[in-house]
Amino acid sequence: MADPCIFCRIARGEVPAQMIASNKEIAAFRDLNPQAPVHILIIPKNHIGSLDDTGDSYLLGQMVSLAAAIARQEKISKTGYRTVINTGKDGGQSVDHLHLHLLGGRPMTWPPG
Ligand code: 5GP
Ligand code: ZN
Image (cartoon, rainbow, N blue to C red; front, side, top):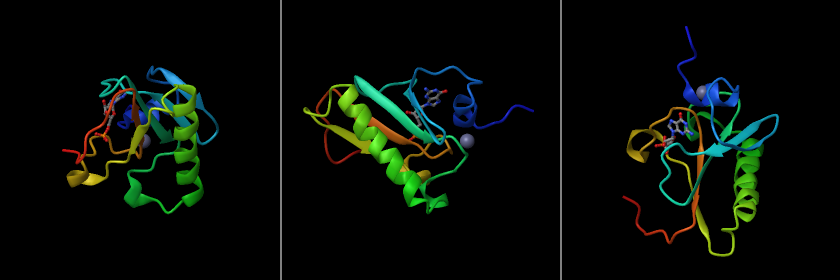
């Protein structure tokens, strides 16, 4: 049976995605349903369900640092951007594989919905 986790399948190259960056541990690709002109997802290649399922501060730091590097590459670092990790039901997480959203290219509002 195919792996039910879509982000694991993207990480393995089994499902196409617009890949932005990839190293041994992390992949970054464009969101299928972008909510801003720049909307990129940064994921660990190994399956981690959510932020509640890891204490790997090195990995988490790498994900955040990569988001900042991609923001510079996408030329949104001067205008600003938002990084978001939705966790669990109340957090609005819809894909149960840890991911960091990088959103930019338009002004964001606060509070989030
Ligand atoms: P969440 O709501 O879990 O924080 O975010 C999941 C994100 O994954 C959503 O923004 C959704 O558009 C994106 N997404 C879901 N399935 C796919 C897919 O197959 N490919 C890509 N590139 N993005 C996806
Ligand atoms: Zn997964």
